Image (cartoon, rainbow over all chains, first blue to last red; front, side, top):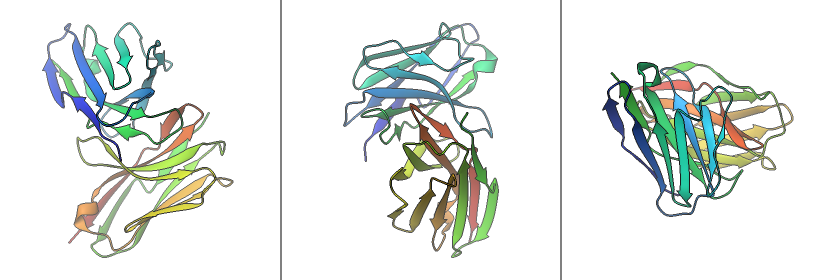
Length: 115
Length: 110
């Protein structure tokens, strides 16, 4: 398999602040990375797709100005939750694939709590 | 619009039982289907990946089948163990993204 590392695993922040989550593919180059959000007892919902060197594609209903995604290299993508609010509290998970439509490898997830 | 459904939503079985988890999807035009395991508060671990041209994949005590024409996949777990307790998710690769089912919460008790 392949390893995807996500950091931090959990974070607590104050309402109105920004939080950055990193997703790294440790032993392979990821052309495509995905960001998901999972609310309690619900399945994963795709937020956005990022391809290295280009702008992310956001799913309907996801605010691109609030959830900033950067995929500056083939091994790193970041998700920044700007001006976080309590309703942004959720479990965020990234995945990475060598190419589109190939096996996806997931990070460990980040538990975000906004107080 | 692709929809993925998993049945049952929860399952509790004694150790040693063989069990089947079901996944159905509405649009058969998929690239592949993956089964994942998610432990509470953790990320996902990929269990099996079945390409659209394949009918099944096996890994240890796990066997996954795919019937694309009927929009169904099953995950068979043989000789279940308490360590198998987790939520199992299936996801279909639909053109450019994974669509997840709602998962089956499995508990295997000693």
